[in-house]
Structures are given as structure tokens and as C-alpha cells.
Length: 474
Image (cartoon, rainbow, N blue to C red; front, side, top):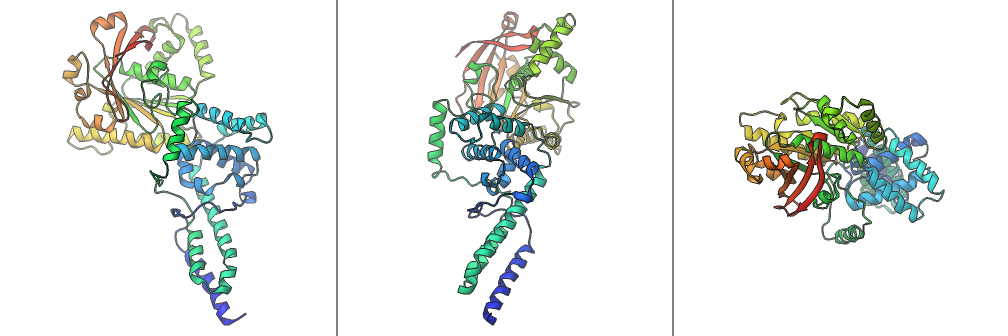
């Protein structure tokens, strides 16, 4: 071997050593993709570990955003897991979120089965899917690091092997570029690049699918079709903050409870945080609503109520209730709760905060308006961070309380709430309407759809049913 060639090889080794001396997990540059020929996880990740990765790809948007570009279906030994990972990644490419919702996953599975994506048959694939939906996905950060390390090592190996001919050709700049790019493979923490003009075909296809009823609904249902149809997402939007506004005793909590129940009944997981009404009362109201029993009669037929709740729960998503003293819960505490549940493998589709006005700001100042603004901004941030629908309530001011229709300008304390939330709906009810079991929902403001119209509803408050039926829309 010539001295020049030996020097070149030493230079390559030096580049590798120098590259590895830096941070081991970095943002993947735009030009870095999963290797053209992905290496199977093999001994690096055993079958159980691969199943956990597949479950995370299916259910955890944050995981896919961070390391989805490093994962390929070709890396999985289980052919059904590989197909389900492909199904999930295709969905993420379209909608920038993991399927996660049981309803969406079921629809995607039907489509994948129709495309014959499961060579071992539908039943075996269905069993694998059920396993992934139940699988413990705690320790996501550790998995992220392991996947990034694996991908980086494989990329470096490929770069080294691919540089052999370049050494003999003396193309040191190209070698250096390959090595640096390989070592840069890692976790993406800078958000996603979205090319507006290049993505027009994807948006068009999504609209065709939505019009044809092929696109799985991403909205969290209200439980009332006529209500869902007036919402942009056909329900409460993920990554959005929706706000119910009303005066004292107008039914804000009852509406929040009903919306949480409807989401759970649709298979979604709901976290209900109450800051005013005790968790026991929340549970009592839910019992009345679900069993269609008057609140005062819960003591009369307790066994019947219990049986109805058990039957409903067998088909519903999770419904967790957490109680805090008024004015004590900060946004960071909500994040901590969501993270702890996630560590247990439980991801939520909807967070209900009853209610935002009586939360504590992260850093209290003397200006109440600034405190309120901080809370609502943080609530919307949580919606985006955790890919869930956040629903909360706010009071009207004195003028709104006296008005027949509470409008956006009637929000209490701080108009910034209206600027921050994605939709605000006011509850309106006169004494005469209350006596007849009627109320009106006025769409006061919205970021993504029309507003200024009213949904007239019938109620059965004795049974805690906020919307018994929709009478008309004007």
C-alpha cells in the first residue's frame, strides 16, 4: 500500500473519530433519509422491542415526528407488523399525525386489507393490530435514542463501505461529506418541513377522499350528528383549543361532561380535569347521563345504574377524572399528568379542563389579563404538543350574562381568549327556555369556519343530558 493511500485511510478514520466525538443525537438534515436499503433490526432489537416500535409508530405522533424518518417497514421481521407500520406511515405522510384513534385505525385496517397488504391473511393481521393497540408504549424517549443510535451506526457502516472506491480515487471531499451526513443521522427536534406548493396534490387527494367518505374522520365527535356537521373537523379538532362560554349556572360543566362522554363512547380516551366541581359529582352526573336516570333517582335504582355503566364501559375508551382545588392547577401540571399516563401506555385523544378561567398561570403576575392570556395560550400549546383536542369553558362578563345572545365581545376578563382559541361557542338560555328544556348554542367566533349562527337544542337536565336533540339551525 502506498504511503499516500495509507495517509488517505488514516484521514478517513480520523474523520470518523472526529465525527463521533461530537453530539451523538442531532437533528437529521433534510437530505438525510432512511438508507436506500434499510437494515433489518435483527439482533439489535428482539421481537418484543420491534413490537414496541411498531406500536409507537401506530399510536404516538411525537415518536413518529422524531424518528419516523429512520424507520422502514423492511426493518421488521414480523410481516404483519411491517404492513401495519407501512399503513401508519402512509397515514402520517398525509395527515402529519399517527392514526392513534381506534376509529381511524379500524378504517385504515379495512382499507389496507382491501389492498391485500396482509399476505398471511386478515385474521392474523387483525390479531397483530389488537396486540399493538394494547402494547405498553412506555419509555418512548429511550426507544427514540435506541432507534437513532441504530440508524446512525448503520448509516456510518454504509458510508464507510461506500467510501472504499473513493479512497483509491482520492475523492476525500466526497468521503468527508458521506461520513458527516451519516453521523448526522438522528432525532428530528426542529419540527417538520412542509413545502406548500409541492404538497398541493396531497391536499387535493385528501379533499377527494373526504368528499367520498374515504378519509377517516379526525374530529372528536360531540355525539350529535347535527352538531358535528357544523364543526370544521366533523367534531372537536385535534391540536386545537375549543371553548364553551356561558354565564353562571348556564350548563358549562354539563356540556363539558357530555362532550367527554360522547368522545369516550366513540372509543376515544378522555382526561377530564375538574377545578370546581368534585370528581364525585362529575361521576354522579355521568352516571345519570349514561344510565338515563334522573339525578334524584340514582339512589332508587343503584343496581340498574351500575349495570348500564358497566355495559357502556365495556365498549368505551378510557375516561379519567382528576380533581384539583380551584386556582391550583398549572399548565405544567397538565403536561406532567399527560406524560405520566403516556409512560403507562395511555395516550389521550381529548383533554377537558373544567375550566380554564380558574387555572393557575405558570408564572403569576399582577395583571389578571396577562395571567388569563398565559393560561389559554398554554392550553392551546398542550393541544398541539400532545396531538389532542382540548375543550374548556370560560365565563361571560356582566353584559354577556344579561344578553339574550352572548357574543365574542362578552367573554370575561380578557379578549385574548377569543384570539387564542380555535372556536368559541356560547350557551344561551332564558328563564322561559329553561322551563321548556330548551337552550341555544351560538357560534361566536371561529378560526377555521363560519360563525354567527345558532343551534337550537332540546335538553333533559334532570338526566344531565345537555343535548337531547337539535331542533334547528339558524
